[in-house]
Image 1 (cartoon, rainbow over the protein chains, first blue to last red):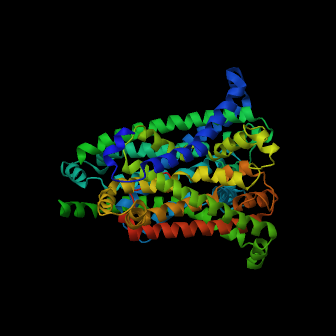
Image 2: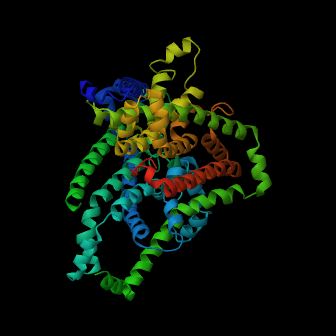
Image 3: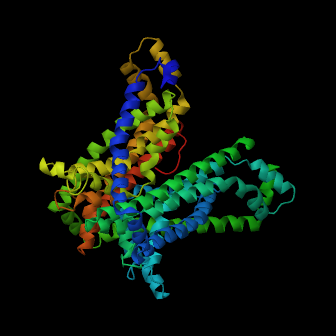
Length: 278
Length: 287
């Protein structure tokens, strides 16, 4: 606090910091403390029991496995879309660019029922897949589809600025030295994009793991098969089993925390990447 | 070098690759993003405009619209004040724990919306920390409007601060220091110097904050209790109608929310085109 002295020509240090801390304390920290406190009610043995329950395991497996698969798909298609949007010029490009943010803007419940209607056996796309013998709605595949939808913008929006600032001279140099396009992509472009690609992947993963609204409609929520972890929390709450709901919440928060640390490490890494080239 | 590149790029394998990549990207986006949006409007209009309008004119629909507007009207100003205060503290002063504070401000984005609702139930619910005290004083927070507001404030907390902090960091404090040296008091400095400098970024943050506050589902669904006409916001009304097999009705309300999303995207894109230089370099996550 004493460090602020030399900046004192500007007013409002105490007021703005005090208000920020008070608001964060009331809205974020106090409720999170309640979460930890309630979760501790079942003890370590209770937590292990909860985690060992087949239904919990199935839900965790679906939430994390589905999110992982969806984020991998997003990494591939996100990279492709970012590349096309930055490097190529074609009619409708700006419209397409604005459309990338749709999953951020569309309320999750709306996305949920829309995806369900689209992929249901009598839906526009579901009918076609049904003819091929593939069911999407009310299966684990449907959960994955919803997770791809919500995570997609993260990868594109993290990659775009990096792609835009990419030094084309390196590609030209590689090309004049006789490298093929595939070699240029794998050895010149991809290494520079990697930190941003991983960051987008991690953001999409974190979002997909915790996603609720867009998933629960298309999932069908069959116990052991298409039940995601956030839904399990809601069910525990509806049975007034607060401690177990809180314990599952802590498990998910723990994962978010790990992702946050990973992301900040990634950012430090990407800054190291950015410096020598600038 | 450029001439050589251009001549090579125009060779047909390059063109084919270019066309294929563009086609796949466009097809992916149309199937994954545009089709769900189109379905909303198609389903809402499945039984005609008349059915859509009469389904929107029903009492529960109107009260859900009213409640959504009320919640947003409380949540957005709260987060404007918080966002401006937090950005001022974070960008104009040095203090210990700044990085931690920044991480805390961003935290709600990485928390599952269900947990955002859960934590308030654990505080204010019947078996929560303050539950017995609230019951004794006949105050309802959970299954009532205050709970909806709290959960919405939590999930939209970072939006404004996230837009302002990088911008104010980049702008520096010279303008404000000059105003102070020339004799402006704190309020004059804020309203005549700071606010004009950050107005577009602030508007941008408010836009995203409002869209999320009106569209939030997971967090409010946990604290709402789904009492028709009293605690159901528009997204919850969508869910209830859908679960009652009133698909046209569900998509009718959903189409209003989809219009809100389109409007938000349109204004957001406009702000980026027109005032891109006055907005911060965009970090993804809250867009």
